[in-house]
Length: 80
Image (cartoon, rainbow, N blue to C red; front, side, top):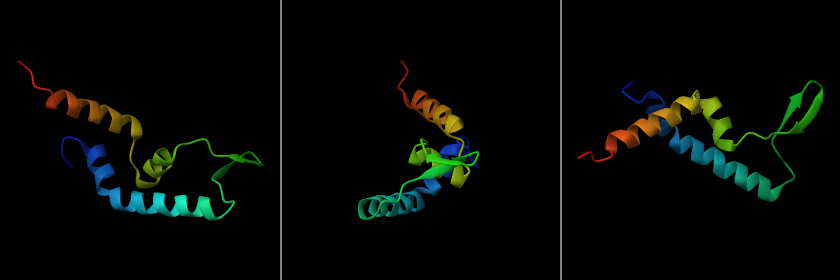
């Protein structure tokens, strides 16, 4: 891995993430299916974003990803 490992992992999963997102969009349009999770024995709607769920699935730490993105932007800024 390079200097920005979370960014690299996130970028490497782009096609898979897009395919999963497209499938879920289609599913939600054509059925009553929704994301849910158990809290104890009670099933409740999932409040996590799809990006957060996909990051967990692909092993990407969203907090580290955001820090790396900020570092990339900071390094890309032209400094006099």
